Length: 378
Image 1: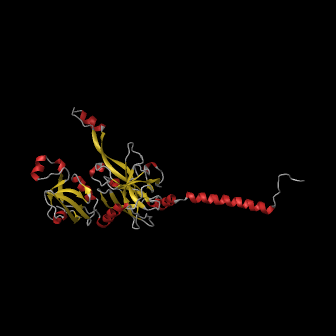
Image 2: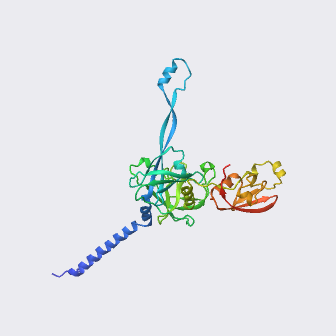
Image 3: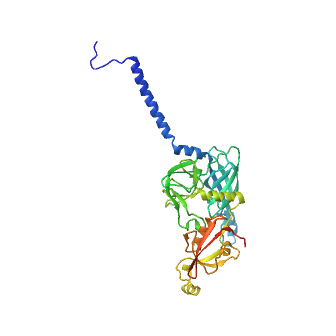
């Protein structure tokens, strides 16, 4: 029979064609599998085993009715409080991560603040670690714990001085950890939205150095505090710390403390058990708060700056030449308007760092430089 418009296929060419089809399909599947395991996935796999869930317990006093005393004392017609005080255990959740082979754990100071005890520190593999507090610093909002155990995972610390706006940022932690039945951390991915971000100095009650922060749109929620912010190489670039939100949930405005600062604070906490408080050795008043008559009497013709009103004669600033009546206008190139501005620059420095004051002394501009010393107990 003659086949019109069709050509019979011999066995060998058909087999080769089928092999080519299967080979193409296998290559396509392999390409898909490879694309799934990208840099982000690899970074998360590298970091997440060392992220811990931290539960702390605070004992809060509360008043509760006491029917017995109400009935008893009521017989005498006396005015009654009708309540007594008892302690109530309140748990809160935060995050942290192991960062060296010695079992040291980084987290935020505010995760542990006001806690009566640490309830648990749990790894993703389910181990509840025995830990002790190494040290904590309120101003930088950094705390270090130390865990004991065998084969503890840890995360390599990166650097934060070379961040690129727009590069990948991965936030890992335990938001709403008490609602989950397993200890594995949650992951959210975004980008570095901004670097060296300054927020209002009233944030944190004006007692925390929430300046020079990393901003990210990776979702950060309650419970993420203390967890790592990671780059695409799986290196920690910051410690997730706070969000701006009108609802309490993530709105794409998350902030992390840069890891370069955290490393220096952690080193001090581990070495000394506390952060050595940097000290300029003087106090001042805002020029804007002084009466015009006082300014005239002092011969000050400036609208802004900090008037040195008290100084310790053994302090680094005095030894370097700062005197009563000087008006400090800049510290390390940053304009200062009131004593709080000076404090924030001071908190960002470490013992031995250089401080440069720009000073106006009776109309003459001076530059005074000295090494920051540790605060003296008085």
